[in-house]
Length: 136
Length: 295
Ligand SMILES: C[S@@+](CC[C@H](N)C(=O)[O-])C[C@H]1O[C@@H](n2cnc3c(N)ncnc32)[C@H](O)[C@@H]1O
Ligand SMILES: [Mg+2]
Figure 1 (tube, rainbow over the protein chains, first blue to last red):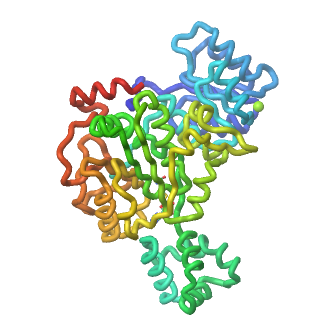
Figure 2 (tube, rainbow over the protein chains, first blue to last red):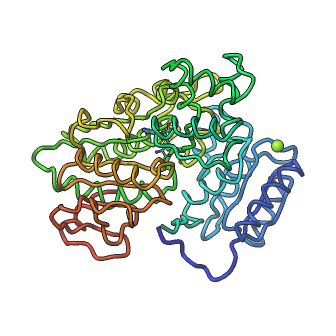
Figure 3 (cartoon, rainbow over the protein chains, first blue to last red):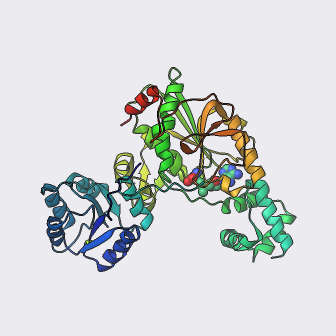
């Protein structure tokens, strides 16, 4: 798979009401070379997307101000070209909830707890990260 | 532990599984064998070695050998080999076997099953292309413990997220408590059997594709060579072998030749040349057509 070189670092938006999750997930993205923006609510995330569309959003489900699904549905109705890739990242871990998120327009789904391997695998599947070929 | 004890245990492991451990790896013996020592009441590696010297208890030996295996694996591990299989090797095999409509695939050190189940899901996703085909996936490992887990078809939330896209999780798994179990449409495609790669492989039959990944790394050069030759004898003349990311045929065995443009993919050295699609390379027209039918 060839990853298009867009000539500048990718922008990622980490949306989670937990400071810890934002810090750790943000760090994982930074290690992968992303520029990272953070938001603690779905509402603020939408405002940020109106200013500049990120390449990928890591989106929590349960948040006090606007939950991730409402945010996602609103985002998908917005006139953005291209639309960002959205990875739901949540403690919700049933098939039913995954189905709801995918129907709402998520591209991928991560069940917490996760680690950097899982995050990287998901980004590879979304075509945002290249596969390393180990030297033989 | 004395040098003699270490040499005895290391020798036993090398003889039984091919595992090579250097004297700097005593901690690995301690760590991996501590559970067994506790169960049997041995106070340390000396006592374990002494016991094995006095009574050659086959069941204790099997437990020791099993405990020393590294079973690290994941669904679609390393991603790229599965893409090479989907885009290049599978189309070539479908063309070569058209008419017989039969494929036999071997996952030759399958650990807890993620590798053969990944192949099964990948093939299931190509159902339209494979209508009327009989596909057999045989998955083997030295360790009965990992085979037992593989047969349970059950994985943790953590394991199903490693390497696997969520759409395959939704499609092929059901939720059992906090875990995930493969549905039988995929689970039934894989047959698990015990098999030591150091042993006689002739009973395995002949395969069109062998995945032998991340197991040769534990062996010394002569063992690698012997095992590769034995695997080659269980392959169809025009079959394919795929090794792990850090494994290479270079300087190990001349029974196989590289497939140009597809790192980690090999064919028997005596195979007739074939044109195969390589991403970024040039494809023979007929293979490009076969590839075009794969979504
Ligand atoms: C690291 S896992 C590789 C699993 C999978 N092929 C992958 O690449 O993810 C290595 C496996 O090789 C098995 N193994 C080690 N020595 C073996 C032998 N002599 N014969 C068969 N299997 C062996 C171990 O039990 C272990 O499950
Ligand atoms: Mg939350």
